[in-house]
Length: 264
Ligand SMILES: NC(=O)c1ccc[n+]([C@@H]2O[C@H](COP(=O)([O-])OP(=O)(O)OC[C@H]3O[C@@H](n4cnc5c(N)ncnc54)[C@H](O)[C@@H]3O)[C@@H](O)[C@H]2O)c1
Image 1 (cartoon, rainbow, N blue to C red):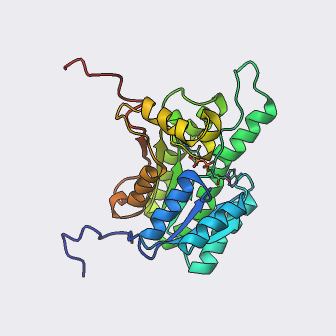
Image 2: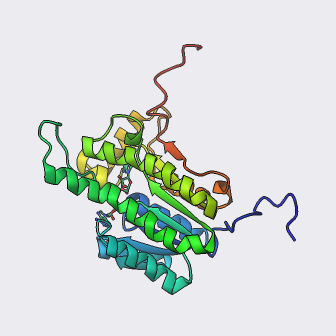
Image 3: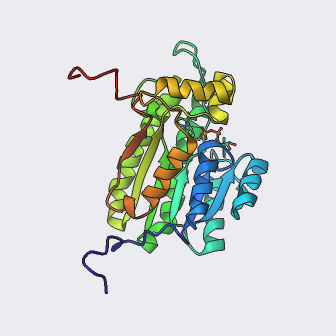
């Protein structure tokens, strides 16, 4: 029988022994998150277009890796089905794979660039939510998490990137409303600038990107992929059991804090 003060009462939420599927787990935020779940005792399945990178990470943490192009629904479905076949269920889905996508001014944007970016940053999230929900609904348990961006809440990315990351907030709320009745939580983590493969190519390497990350953060330290990993583990576990439809912005205050308060 459950004691009244047992804070883990309710849906099954322990991360240890849980099954987590992470897209883009071969690098950056996804890699740090895969490592954090494995360290917490989770059974991790990584899907990545870069299968060598995914295998390298998986081999070092005892996880499974599978090639998956998240722009293709059948491949996302196959990744999640494989996790369920191997481990009997999926507890946490993390829609994380992404790229910067098409860049340039609104007067120059190409139709192809626009739709390719929507495919990688938005369609992928819809596919991940859909196929995770298919398995979670009958079990009345699960957490669906997505990597948004602080470009979700401020004009920081190229237009298609900002658009997709903003859409993730709406999708997260909307799907959370549907799935709440099935006791499935749906939340997002919105990172600020972190040195990863995605940004290091833009800002001149890892060191320069870390400096830039610290520079744009009012808290003054570079934001790390491991900081996002902690939030994902928290939201997948007991900490996230009473929250759904939310996006946590983890950007050192970059989109909130503007210099010292007028009261100081
Ligand atoms: N780095 C940042 O500053 C930052 C800030 C905010 C949000 N994000 C978001 O974080 C997520 C992870 O990015 P990251 O910074 O760790 O970059 P990263 O380049 O280090 O990792 C991205 C991973 O996604 C994989 N990937 C790319 N296209 C794919 C596809 N079609 N199918 C499957 N896998 C694919 C890559 O192979 C790579 O392993 C992205 O959604 C990105 O938009 C990053």
